[in-house]
Image (cartoon, rainbow, N blue to C red; front, top):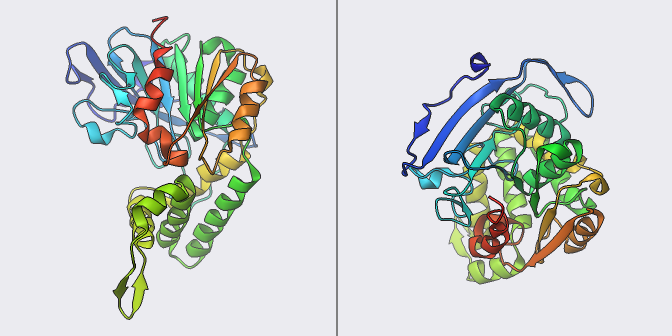
Length: 343
């Protein structure tokens, strides 16, 4: 089994604290992975990282499609995608839990994903769940203490809990429903068309910049944009550039510089293919809804909490909208407190 792990970096012990350990690797899954929508991954790989207090219960923490296995890092705090929420003494406290993160199948990390310009099969949240289950087997983790999933990670959490009820004790699902709202699919299909059109012209990266800029306008709220970008445009090259325009396209350039267009297409589609049977989820489930979220409407999350047999709904308000899970650490802290009471 040890031969199935190819370390991507040296294992770290004493991750800024003698009680905290971090280890990571890339698991070469020993069998092909049949895919929910057809086909298979013949030689699947899943990159992972496990960090937190030695011997503590394990919590899986997964985020949006651009999230990766480095959920937090005590040595390089800004390198963790959830660095404002997870870590020693944070809302999700790594001094009390061990946090397991992965690079998604189909993404731009070290797990199996598309090569530049090459096709890749359609992926389901069930496929991510199956790969995670195989990883737990490899790591000798019989049951997750909890699965905390936000955005696409929440979809994977729901799929995992439906398929493998004995492998998770509880769920915290933030800004993710059991199926995708058609309005959200409308925005994402336009984003994917932009990338594909640009790719047909040999300019896929520029297409991804545009798609990400459009996506950013759906992640945040009108109130936040009004507060940040209400001042006057500036003149440039005989025209005008608006403050919000500069922000959106700066974010687009940053994203396109670190993410692969083919991975965006794969995982954006996976979001829109997502659909699970919430009535089959037996684990106690905390559903966290953000009232201002444009992508995952409040009514959908109220309905999800009602369909899950042991579902509880928490409603938050945030100008960050869908991105609130990245920013609202103090609002999330009391929700995560319930995970410690049974440690």
